[in-house]
Structures are given as structure tokens and as C-alpha cells.
Image 1 (cartoon, rainbow, N blue to C red):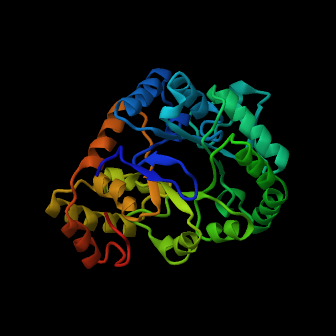
Image 2: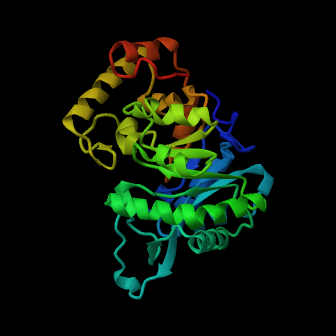
Image 3: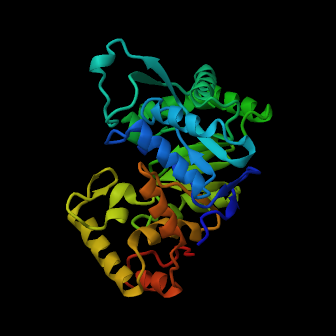
Length: 340
């Protein structure tokens, strides 16, 4: 599969390279990445021909956006597509030396505040432009409006109302003014796509962890509902947060937690099928989502140049049709899942 071939993104007029670059890792997710490694990693992605880059204020609390900006702001602006996100604003923390970094091993000492209001979306957008050193963002996403992050359904409903009554108007104004080319939403949980589509006309979703070799439940309701409206997809978390890249090894992660014995067994069976067809498991994980014509790009992260190059090589690895057929025959992949 050609990583540099382009696909149209949902209802936008924007085309993405089939292989993009996800920016959470360069926000120091779980481990600190040096400035030298971050710069070299993004340079390697560019040299390999990747031209779609996704980041967010939340990734390292501004760290990822700063790094992407330094790598991209001198590049010809017409040559790449950039997405970032709204829904949080960042504020200086009073005690930077003792800042609680949470899931970010490093990052910057800014505390975040969820804000889906008109003013909150506008502030988040303008702040991102300054961190990036750019004057335009191609597509903007509503970030993390789900139960996973907000814990209580009442809080999710309140933020949805805030978005519907304010933030959505800000996004529409930005699009109508040509400051962004499309509006999307980043989704981590089942059930949120229909709720958002009931309230607003989105162009696409960035679906993280919920359309992988291990999970295709979105094919039941979410994806068909989106297809009716021409809504497209970018797929994040294609390695299920680790196990589909590492295989079923000790300490393998699935959904950001230690993989359960049941998941470990499923992946071992997948690895056996991979061995019979000479297909690396990461290659299958990367290429699988592109079998769905509504998927424009997959965006694995990387924190070293070698990881970038391995992702590109995996994306190019030939996979025979018999491989996908055996996965389905063994009950390891849904029979109705579209494959490349």
C-alpha cells in the first residue's frame, strides 16, 4: 500500500496522505523525548513523504504543538495538512517545579481547563496558532468530549450543550472565514458519534482505538450513520496503544492498560496467521483501516526516526488477500469488515 497516496477527507475538499503522523508521543506521552529526537523524528517523517500531521494542545500541555510548529513553519504551507484541536485552554501553573504531569512524563507546566464555549474555542484556536507559529490550521477538531475524560454523563451533557450553544458557532465562523478548511471531532468511546451528529454537521471524525484489528464495533451503528452523511474518518490508535505493534509480549498495552489474558490470546492467534502469510503484525494493523473507503488516513505516532521509517516500511509491506480471509475464517476479524 502506498503511504503517500492521497484520499479526500469526508465532506472537506482536503486530501490527506494515507499515512499521517500523530503527535501525542511528541508531547512526552509516558516517556520524555529530547528536543533533538523530536526534531529528528519530524524531519524523518517529512523526508519519507508524510504530509499530514495531527497534534493538540493537550499533548504535553502545549509541548507537541511547539515541536510541530518548529518543524513545519518554514516548510511551504501548501505542501502539508495540519490538524489540531479545541476544547481545552492552557493556563500557567503557579508552582512549575512541582507540576503534576499526569499521563505526560514531561511536557510543559500548564494546567488545562475544559472549555467548549464560543470564547473558549476562539482562545484555543488563537493560542494554537501562536504555539505552532502558523497563520492557518487546515482542520480543527473538538477534543475529548466523552465519558472517558469527563467521568459523569451529566458533565458530558453539559459540555455538549455548551458546545452546541457557543463553540459550534465559533467553529462555523472560522470555517466560513476560510481560517480552517474542515471541522471534526476526536472520539475515544462508542456512542458519541451519533450524539454529536444529532447536534451539528461535522465533516469527519478522528476515531482513536475504536477501529483496529481488535475492535470493529463501530461498523454496527456509528460508521453507517456517518456514511449516510458523507462524514469521513481519520484513524488513530491503530496499534491499540501498543499490543498490535509489539505483539503479545509481557507488559503489552491495550487501551492504555496492561492487555488482558483474553486479548493476549487473540493477538497470539493473529501472530500465528501473520507468520503463515509472512505479514508483520504492525503492517496488518496499519493497513487494515484503509480497507474502508471512508477512511482518509491512519496516524500512528513515533518518537524516533527509526520508528517513522519502520511505520513507512510496514505500510508498504504487501499483504495477500488470503491473509485477510484467514483472519475472518478464524473469527479474528469481523466477516463484514472491509479489507484492503
